[in-house]
Amino acid sequence: MKALVLSAAGLLFAALPILPANAGVLTLGGPLSYGCYKSAEAQDTRASAVDGCTRALQEENLNRTDYAATLVNRGIIYAMQNHYDSADADYDHAAQLAPNLSEVWLNKAYLKLRENKAREVLPLLDHGMKLGAQRPAVAYLARGIAHEQLGDLQAAYADLMRARELEPKWTLPGEYLARYEVRTR
Image (cartoon, rainbow, N blue to C red; front, top):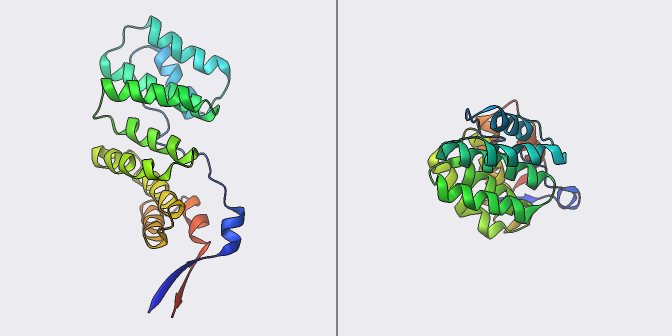
C-alpha cells in the first residue's frame, strides 16, 4: 500500500506565493480601463495603479462586462497591497455584474487562500474552473494548496500533479510537489 506523506521540512518553509491568478482581465472599454488591466498584469502596487482603475470606473462609459473586469483588476491590485477587504468588495461587486466571469471567482478564491480561509476557497475555485479558467493550472495549484491547508494530502497531491501536467514549464507546482514523498507501507 502507498501512503502519501508531506515532508516536515516543506511545511516549515512553505510560504504562499502571490499566485498569478488569471492575473488581469482584459478590457477594451477605454484607455484607463486598459491601463488598469496592464497594472494588474504587471502586479503594480503603487497607489497610482488603484487611482487609474478608480478613474476608469468613474469616467469611462464601460459596458457591464468591462466594468466588472475593471473591478476584478482593481481587486487584484488591492489584494497585492494586502487591502483584502477592498479587494473582496470589488470581487463581490464584479460577481453581481458578471456572474459568469470566471476570473471573478478565481481571484476571490486566491484572496481567501491568502487569508488562510481554505474552506471558502474550494467552492469558489470549482465554480471559477467550471466557468473556464484562462490558466487552469493556476486554479489547480491553488486548489492543491487549499487541500493541503485542510489536511487532505491525497487531494492536494493530485491537484498539484494536475497543475504540473497542464503547464510543465511552470516551476511552482514542482516546488510544491518536491515537499511530498510517496512511501509504500
